[in-house]
Every structure is written in structure tokens, then in C-alpha cells.
Image (cartoon, rainbow, N blue to C red; front, side, top):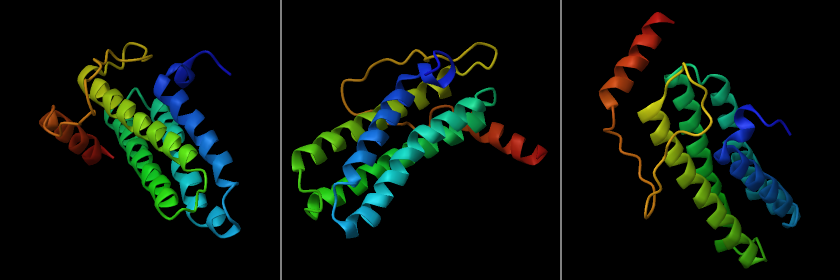
Length: 163
């Protein structure tokens, strides 16, 4: 594994490791669920780390970087929903494993939310991005849509009108 680039991002590593664990878990499901809810869980969990990788490649452009990070957050939340379905329908017989994976998925979402807040606040394309200064929160991370909303909107509109 490379020791540079997105591989140094904790949020990428945590999301990637979770996707591998979910991938393995889904092949313990019944044949029906393996290709139904299991397939959805595999795809959404893999999209989290993949979106971080794609966004990292475009990190020079704050608006593009954020689009991919928000996609990653949406996929992380979607992954939680698939895990909840598997647990509630008893399709995943190992409830303890399901709860462990669900907690890990919630943690990935929280970490992504804090990472997004840091990028929104501190993005500077002229310096390398390893990990923005992100204060730890006491509880669940909540994204404030009003933070620099006018700046993000005008920046996105400006880039869109040039394309």
C-alpha cells in the first residue's frame, strides 16, 4: 500500500476496511439475500471509499472535492440502511456482527461529516491535504448547511457557468 495520497486519510482507510468486512459478511447470507440486500450493501459500502479516492484526485478544486465527499457520505448513510434491513429482517443471523458493522458504518459517516466540515472551512489547494484540523465533537457530527453557504453556492454557480 502506498504511504502517500489518499492512503494517508483515516476516513479512506476506515471506509475501505469496512467495505471489505461487509463484502465478506454478505457472502454468508442466504442465496436470495446475497444477491438482493447483500449486493446493495456491497455496492454502497464500496462507493464510500471509491468516492473519497475520486474526490481526492480533484482536491485542487474545492467544489468538486466536496461533491465527491458528499457522495461518499450519502453512500455511507445508505450502507447503514442496508445493514439495518439485514438485521431487522433476520437475514443476517449473526446479529452481533450486524451491530458491529452498523456501529462501524455510523462511525465512518461521522468521520466523513467532520472531514467535510474541515474541507469546507480550511480547504487550501496550494498546500497538501493530509488531514484538515478537525475538532472532535462530543456527540454526533452534524453538518451545518449555513456554514459558508453563500461562498459555496457562488463558487459552484461560477464554475458551472464556465463549463
